[in-house]
Length: 330
Image 1 (cartoon, rainbow, N blue to C red):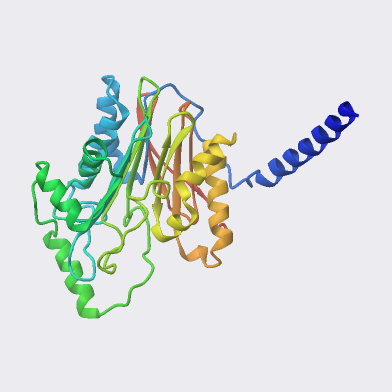
Image 2: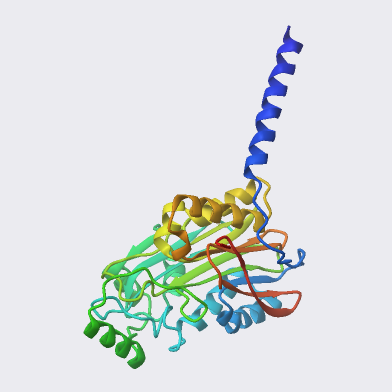
């Protein structure tokens, strides 16, 4: 009787597992061939204009540096670029003409730090790291984040560049309503960077000035661990770009990481997460969300809701870019 009971149980559990796997298999979205897994170091970053940031991070990794140090230095380069209107200095302001910044970091030990609605500090990624390393907290926001930054040696600066101020003044005169932003390689809203160092450890960071002309106080997915960024050193790391509200609702980066933990490749995991988002948003063709993923073995994935999501990649000693496959084909 005992043997018979176990046989039935094994059969039922096996059938359920097979059915679950069959339902979870992603569709095929084109013929893009991602590189085969490579030895570390590897860096994958949202948007092709971030190749210079990858170069900074790669130089540190090739000297044997830690992934966390590399991604911080890489992201700092983009944060200091006045020509990047969606990250750091030069970022387009909110409806009140104020530049507010969000950022997060996560290291190989699962330590995290983030800041949101931070004003007047050029490098929120470094403030986020300081929150992680110097406080028992995960996130500081607004005036509290600014006070903490100033107390820890960061310099207060005017982040509203003349170009960004001119764009805001133009928008204000036209009295345009708050509309969903168009996200492309020329108007990307985030730098999300993931790195695998020579010791086989993963870290990630995400930084943004957010939705241009947003309501004052709006916070997107970038500083929210599990939404805009997640790192599991046993499995892989994930970051996102696009409309943060959608990513938050899906806890997107954690979702992709957990799909990888269940056995999916980084590419399959990104595709499944985007499928889920598309099915829950009937107007998905008007939106953009993209994920990039980096597996523990150096394998990568990238996928988006709609076209023109680009990726900057460093592996096997070479800097390249590619355009990710996307869901909304028709």
